[in-house]
Image (tube, rainbow, N blue to C red; front, side, top):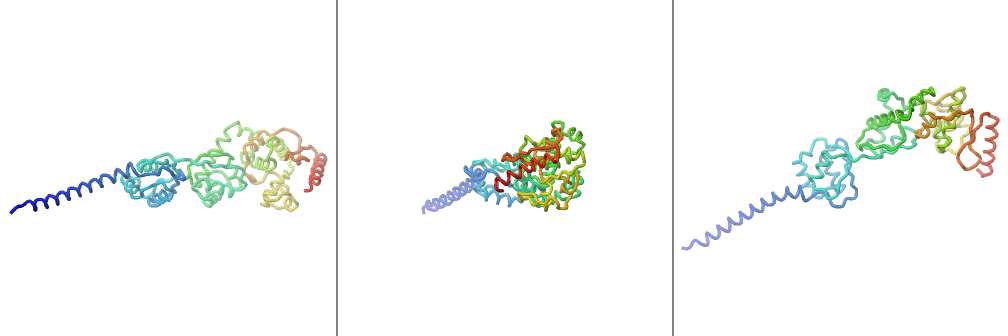
Length: 351
């Protein structure tokens, strides 16, 4: 009796097993290769930056990457992340620029140890610490509430040598690069560093001493100058007027201070309501400088105080034209003439 059919069946069976093993081996060999070298960041992404919050879990990071369109195959990414020890209890936070076409290996390597992409925080002429908080929270991870709470944290303010009223003098208007995952205290400390660097330049600290003023007092006066005029060319003259008034104990009677006191920031006209409003910020009511700045002060305004023009002017009012600049006077009688001319101009304009 021939045994060929039986041998043939056994051969086919063994052959199929060998093929299955080879295929399985090939799959298991291909899967790592695919995860490492072939799948990864798509060649086109809508937004090249990803922000990973402080304290995020691995699953949250995967969700962020998937939602942002930064990974093509989630299972490949998860597999390789485990192999590369990227998965941790608390993932690395920050803002990272992702390059289109990166492999999973390149993506994970960058998220794990790569350089963060900084953000540019822009500070201009915000009035209140709350305004600063709202502006800054649009750039960094710290939200406005955590920033406001830090601005009002008395023990922290004592530690850095400020009060809530003077804190805004620590903020020098400029554009600053910082990491997105900066927290509230980290932001303030960075501003203090920038503040010190600013005052260390151009002999500013000595100039403040020569005026008999602290840096915060210079900033406070500069904030009034800031709100009086947009014309840098006349800021040193206006600063000189206020310094002359301070020297003789005359009230500053600065319109921007009573507007700040009432928080009536939308008004176009200062009335008796504003000038008689009882507040330590109202320089129509109280002599000297207010307790703190009435807004952020620009660098030209700060330098205008430090380099104030020396003159005998005690008064100024708007010019009777559309220039937005002012005319100055040494006596109240001369000031009254200037003021009458401006009022006549206003009436002529039909305001």
